[in-house]
Length: 158
Image (cartoon, rainbow, N blue to C red; front, side, top):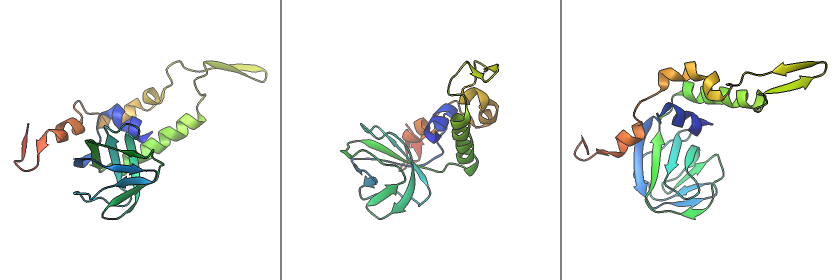
């Protein structure tokens, strides 16, 4: 859900970017990393064949990032590994939305409950229900797009 929420608001809270050939293993990513990562931090993988998404770091060594989810093993080329700095309130809101989805009516328009019938609002997607809370975070231009075009050596965008 966190990945969907960040996509919806078009903001990823990018801190770092590495574009490398990584080895993705079921519990993480292996490589000699150039950036600094922290346990508890989120990362985003883009341009892989099977593992694009947002993951929480659970353990680190100088050559391996271990994540909370299970990944599909693959060797990659030119994969984008984004180090994210997602605010706690965004992570909390993501959990709230997950809880809403679990408790929601799973897309039912109406149902019978014993001796009565209940009709649900047609527009009850998570984005419509939480839209007003998400609007303050929305961005016109993705920070991934901006960050990917920044040359850290020259301090210029290209």
